[in-house]
Image: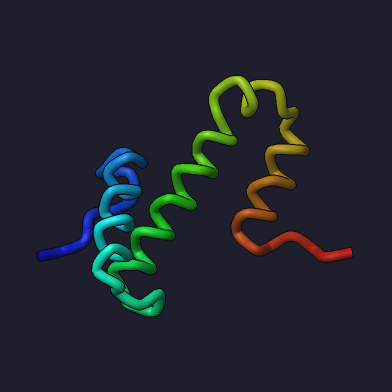
Length: 76
């Protein structure tokens, strides 16, 4: 069975999935645990970058943010 993409399940489903895995003592390096944690990180980022937040950013700040997210930002 293929693991769904982060956006295909709500954050609550990913939390439940991770909780079920951890309750069965599945190790942190298991791909299912890693996928669940990555999906939850996706949802945290998506909540932080809601529509109003993005509307408040000017084009330069949006470009800076995209560069940061994609790892293309120059580190000072």
